[in-house]
Image (cartoon, rainbow, N blue to C red):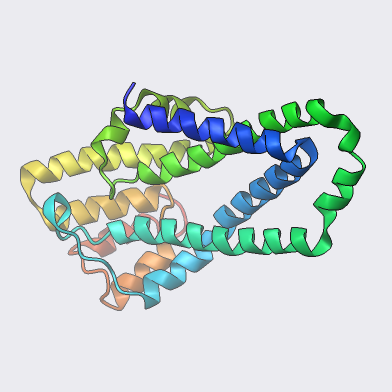
Amino acid sequence: MNIIDIIILLLLAMGAVVGFKNGVIKQTISFVGFIVVVILSFLLKGYVSSLMYQFLPFFSFGGALKGVTVLNFVIYEVIAFLLVFSVLMAIFEAILRISGIVEKILKYTIILGIPSKLLGMIVGAIEGYIVLFIALYCLSLPVFQIPLLNESNLKNKILNHTPVLSKVVGESMKVFEEFADLKDKYDEETNVNEFNKESLDLFLKYKIVSYDSAKKLIDNGKLKIDGANSILEKYENGKEK
């Protein structure tokens, strides 16, 4: 167990404590709202990230990732998700405050007392677990390269063995694993263009970036990769050839 594992356990405990304090009704409303916001954020992030690709500058990386421009796709996908999530979460919190729905419901559930708080603790721990899952997923992106995180036993168990969630992000985790293999190959061959080309193929294959977005970036010269059009042709009709 390393420091990351300890932090994970502390954050789970904090979620449980918050749930105990809020009680089951308030915490359940918070939990359901959080889940809806997360789902909507995943559904809407593609529209936002597509605009970012086209109108915002690409980052330049140094070190082992120097010249790897395709990593901008991953960065903007994460930024888009966090942006949409923040906006939707703020709207949800505002609606709760304006409507006063939580306070109204709590007035009728005051008699639950300790049972309400215990159930709230369970819901709070579950919500905290999901927040941790999302945070660990984002921090596992190739661009971060955090050695301590990779050594965490709990991190791997959470990402690989969580019902439903692990299946949902399974394809993305495959991307990270295959990208890591490409990075090792790149370290040995030091061919930036080939690394970019193979990474583009990987991101198109797993739909990290859409065919249309990649084509626009290549056509306007923002994504400069020799031989990129041969990769695009494989996905021209929405299916890998």
